[in-house]
Amino acid sequence: MEDEDRRVVMGLAGVPYSLVGDFSEDWPTPNFVELRNQGNFRKMDSPIPAVPSGAGGTVIRRSSRRRAGSLRAYGCDHGTYMLSFSNFSSFKKLTFWQKMECCFEELIK
Image (tube, rainbow, N blue to C red; front, side, top):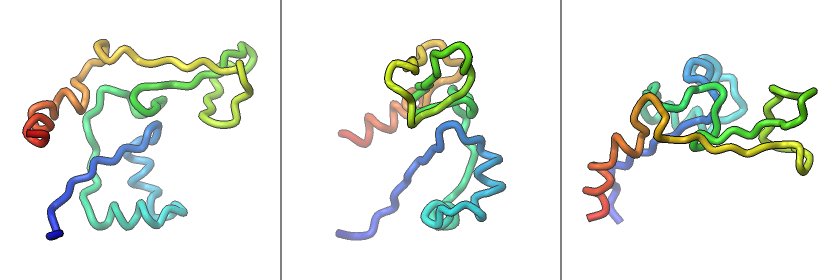
């Protein structure tokens, strides 16, 4: 198989671009640093705010009132969290897949 140009779009849910840029050299993530150094590290416009965020606009929230506001994506006790999905039609900007729809159609032909 011949070498081909590849493009990979990578996002880190809930992590602001500036934080990744400022601290990625010191992170214990050598694979990310290597990818960043080999490619282009740029900020993207996104309809989903950087913080708080989650994959695909999903947010896991604690339902306990005394613990309201503490976000955890792991180690939640059964029944103490609520999973909600954002209404993508209410986003202020087009989603990535809406912007790229024409390109994806070309790729799958």
